[in-house]
Amino acid sequence: MNRRREVPSSPPSRIATPEPSADGRASTAAALSHGVLRGLVPLLCLLLAAGATLTLTALAGQLTPGLDFFARRSLSVGITSVGLVSTAVLYAATCIVSLRRVARWQERGDLWVAVGALLALSVTALIVALPLILAVLLPQHPAP
Amino acid sequence: MPAGPGRGPARPASPSPGTKLATTPRAPLVLVRRLTALFLALSGVLTVGYAGIAIYAASRLVYEAPKPIGRTPAALGLAFSPVTFESRGDHVRLQGWFIPGVLPHRRLTAERVIIAVHGLRANREDRDAGMLDLCGQLARHGFAVLAFDMRGMGRSAAAPLSMGINEQRDVLGAVDSLRAGPPPYRALGRPRVVGGWGVSMGASTLLLAASQEPAIRVVAADSAYAAAAPLLEREVPRKGGLPAAFSPGILLAARVLFGVDFYRARPVDVVSRLAPRPVLFIHGLRDDYVPVVNVLYLAAAARVPGSHVQVWLVPEARHAQAFRTMGQVYVRRIVSFFDRALGPATGGVQQ
Image 1 (cartoon, rainbow over the protein chains, first blue to last red):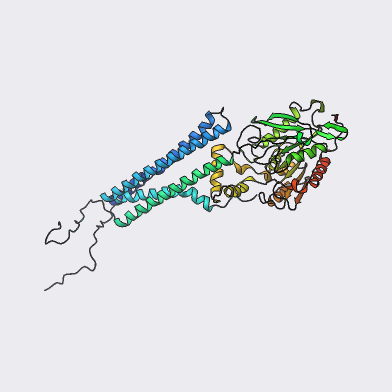
Image 2: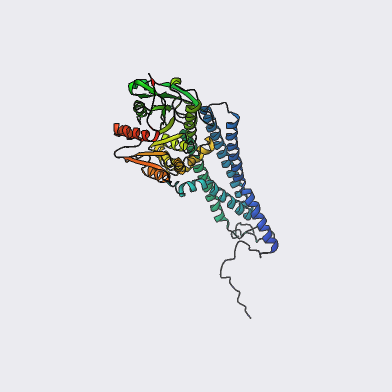
């Protein structure tokens, strides 16, 4: 009795899809969380740097009461400008490091970690762009 | 099974249990990574650029190089005395001059004093508005005039410009100086009544000050704005050649860096407190800097029970140009307004 060998109708999937299990879901969630936390590092650094800049600017004004307005104005602008540049450099550096990590995770197959990190980085980009978005979209201060 | 001669292409090994694989294909994830990188870079560059421009513009907004004073009342043949006093509350040193009123028979008087408040980025001379000439006219009609440079302008001490928020303390300092400071002309004594005339930012500043100082018995506000923020939101980007979206950032930077909250400069919110003191609002119908709607809002807000509000819309007059446009008509209107509100001058001291 010849049994016809069944021919698969589609090529077999190259990626295994293991049956989800409680352990599997937990490890996926853990990997995702891990990735999200690592991906939030640039945002954290940005907030810390921006906060330090504002604090220094405020402190400079408080600690130099004897200076005239011109000197205080120059000091405020100078500190804020240096702080802005430093924040930008720190932000760029942490983003680059984070993206390289994501690439390594992808290569190693830690894809859920990579997905989590990319999610966090996307949110970071959105938060950074939010002031611009609000400035463009919000209506101007209405007339009295 | 490795690739080699006679063998087919290498096939990926079957996944063994425990391998960390996902259901997500890799190629789209690479694309997502690149798009995320692009989004991060774009948002960073744009936001840093926006912040940098806003900071620079804010530093220019709160500071203006003081304009020199070209003429004094002596150029009009009037006696005057330099005065120095401090603002109320924060003791900013202010400079000005006191012009005694001239009565018939060459008598001088300080009985009725008008505090004259100049516009933004000007000084006690305020050449654009013709303020010195108007002060001279008021003096010749028997009103003494105290004209001074607001903080950060003219010869007064440097301070951030704040569209009236802080400058109102300068006007209040002027009142304090008239009431309790050393009299500029001892023989003339102290004033019986004090009124105010202001132009543009000076008018709005005067409204803010008068709302909390009953000693200012009458106010003439020429080209006042009802609120500063809408004006700045329109003018700051326009004069700087920037898109309007920069306005919120510039005003926020001014607040964070210099402590100036331009959104608080709202004379329209306090002008009702002037009642029952007489108020005259003057505005040019061709004012394209402070739109006419501002005076309509101010007048409407000032009209509460017991108020005495007049509005004079001057045809063909641009911003702060009503006096230059109308000349003696303007002088007569102002003088009669002040005469009715402050009463006639009596006495005086022979010059």
